Image 1 (spheres, rainbow, N blue to C red):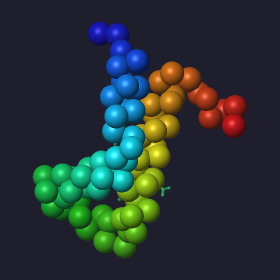
Image 2 (image 1 turned 90 degrees about the horizontal axis):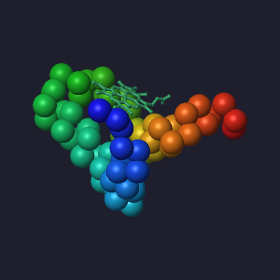
Image 3 (image 1 turned 90 degrees about the vertical axis):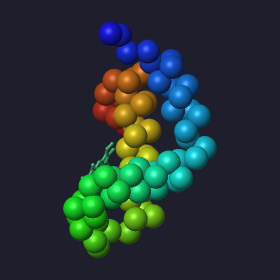
Image 4 (image 1 turned 120 degrees about the horizontal axis):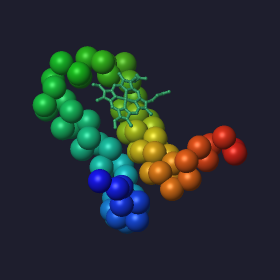
Length: 73
Ligand code: HEM
């Protein structure tokens, strides 16, 4: 099945304004479903981690449209 890039970008665009909330809910769900994963983040600044998670997802989405774009940076 072909990846629908535009649909992916549009749906991610809707999440983008709520990036912080989205990232926080990612870890909430992760720790609910896999409590054993919590200890991996025992010394982690979760606020910073949430930012890193969301930024990395943004790069993944950008890379779908412009594969290897970071090589140009
Ligand atoms: C979509 C999925 C995920 C993405 C995009 C992602 C992304 C990242 C990023 C960007 C970092 C920061 C790396 C750095 O500081 O250089 C990180 C760190 C980390 N991730 Fe993930 N991650 C994902 C899923 C997971 C899952 C499912 C786990 C555990 C089960 C996990 C465990 C960790 C741990 C333990 C760290 C190190 C935290 C620290 O520096 O204290 N990640 N991840």
